[in-house]
Amino acid sequence: MKNSIIISFIILSFTISFFSTSYAEDPISIGKAAYEKGDFLSAIISFKEAVKKDKKNPDAYFWLGNAYYKADSLDQATAPLIQAREFQPENPRIYELLGDVYAKQRIYRAADEQYRKALEFDKKNVGIFLKLGDVDKKARLYKEAAEAYTSVLLIDSTNLIALPDLGTIYFRAKQYLNALPLFRLLVTLQPDSISYQIIYVKILYETKYYIELIPYAENILKKDPNNIEIRNMLRDAYVATKDYINAEKLFSMDNPDSLGAEDLVKRGKGLKAQEKFDEAIASYELAYKKDSTYTDIYYDLATLYNKRERYLDAVAMFEKKIAADSNVNYRWACYFQAAQSFANMKDYKKAKEFVIKSFDYKPEYIPAWDMLALYNGALQLTTEQSAAYKKVIELVAKDTSKNGGDVKYKNSLDAAYRSEGSRLMGEKKYPEAIEYFKKALLINPKDCALLLAVGSLYQRTKNEEEAQRYYCKVIQQCPKSEHAKSATSGLKSMGMDCK
Image 1 (cartoon, rainbow, N blue to C red):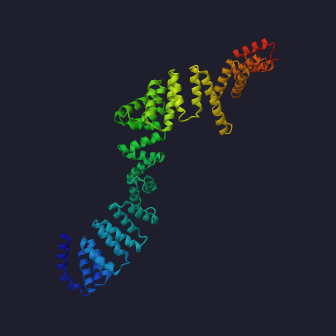
Image 2: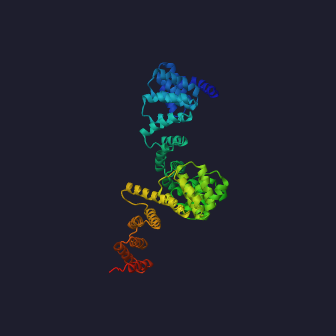
């Protein structure tokens, strides 16, 4: 209001001299000349005179509103522009300028309406789209602002106003995948802009594009080594890409006591990968001390305890993980590995109990059945051991068929055949024992202990020809071994040799 009074006073003081010198000239031309010189007060006088001379001249109203706008007399600018709009309802310049007036008055929704009307008549005007995006952003109409900036980029794909503004809207809305290509282009177009690189690194971090993140984060830290947020993102990227040496360099810049449980776990993972088990344990234990409810600690710390033969501590952590985490894979792994912890403590009863629980999650995991057979053997449960080994044989056959004949679990199958052969031999079921040992020989055809066992079983069943053949294989394969001596004795007892 104060501006309006001052302008009115100045206009009145200039009117008399203006009429005496310029009345006969075209007031619009005079006004435009004053406008070009930045003399907006003189321009206002001329344009008001033009309106008086022709009250239906849209040009006069438009320029009067324009001059008021430039003179920052926004209240007075509105009326002549509305009048101009009445006379020229299809003129986009009038709507745009009226939008500018409302925008400057912070009446953003009214400005939005005028810019949209202008775009109906000037559909590819980048400048108006940018103004529309700006007022919508200020009005917190972010969806509409994003649409306006997108329209700009469809016309001008490298527009350096629309690119960062649209990218920032997406970034703040946590729509990182939408922001990613925009800032990827921005850091290419403006490679010296550290501010763009910082936002880009944050987007890459959230979208887990760690390989792409690393060089930009390293560049930022060269120029600003105290940027802790970017340093921590770079550190996590090193961990994610298994560059544990560089990750540890960044971790070592902080006092471990200052790190949170999550960061200590990340550090522990890196140390574990480098086989620095004691340091890794220390990191995990400190994390546990800071937050004993953080479930990511339990499993990794348990496996580290196993490596250092701290089996009771390992079992305690496995049990914590089982209680706290319903994830099927973790529950299976905890039962399976805890079983091995108990076995290492020679508590085969507990080991058996835990490996059986692992079957609830992976009922056909062959190494687990192999372990169950071993635990039953240690507990002298021969029948149950046999049942477990038969399950191993069944599952390996199924797996081999599924994999096109490729035997993946040869060691488990070999152990099953040998054990079953030995059991049947102890029960004096020699023909059945021979068949199991021969199946084991298909896996290890040069195993002299197996060859000797088959030879001796054939001798017991009075099949001396086959006994001779297997004894001679022992002597041929292992000529200087104890097995060869036993085979030679067997041949002599039958009155035979290998000639």
